Image (cartoon, rainbow, N blue to C red; front, top):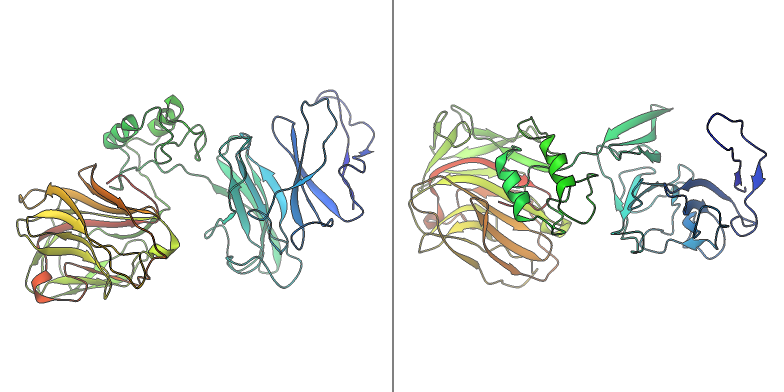
Length: 429
């Protein structure tokens, strides 16, 4: 199988004669699925030629100008290619995002997927930078069936792909949405504008959302234009993995609106339907009231953020903890926010202490952020403490809200808590 080309002088003309791309591009093995970059200087394709990493691999051929011949193909390397089939390349119009998929042929597929052949992506900072390690797009794009042949729209707003459903091949599309809720409060408003302003002219990935959702390396007017399109509008955040609004009026269950599952409310806390910072809230007595959830982020899997509104006046209490693990958000003996999040498996970690008082009986938006190497504490959109921590992480299958990790009597939380959210990304709490 070889690759061929035909050209025409303009879109109104007929296509010319078909020409083989020649021995520089084609090999004696299968070569196919060509995709040319928007600047006409890079040709991506998949090949089963010798020298690869296993099955079909992804290659690129480059040229200096659109009038020059194509150069010798280069394998995209082990961060992109695997010992399985890596095929169907597609590059974004800015040249910084590359989508590809597995192949529906064969019984085995690249590890880390969701069943059959999946869609993957890799990115690079610029045209001269190397491609980063490929990541699986995950659900809802990938599932137990085959998802193959991704194609991205020129404006970077959609990805089209083919999937096998009920024995038939179907074409689907999915939107690429910029994450504009920088502080994780469930809204896109003036606070996010201020957050972007604080990152102006930097390369902060949190606020770098334009002209494409994956940014361009600089926070500038392009990002503000994108943000303005979402201000004041309902925003459905795909990175939100758990949300307890705590707007119930009664009962012993707190609903997680993301999973649809109920968490257990223990003791006799008082529901405050109109007493929260965002709708209702739950008032805990500091004696035996708490919430036990089945949802919790796993630090092993990468970045996460947990944020909540609280109002309290009592010191030495725990707001959120990991059962039999560590206290993630707590109030120290001086009434200041702290964390004992420990991602160093089998070893103890020093607590991260802030100098910010939160026991003034006023509402505060607090948060803990783990970016894979740093612990960060935030209060009211300000980072008040941070440090670095090495380790492989610890597994979490659920959380305690309102009591410490060991369920100790002296760790129960006394006060109001509202709108607890968990994201699988970094936010600016």
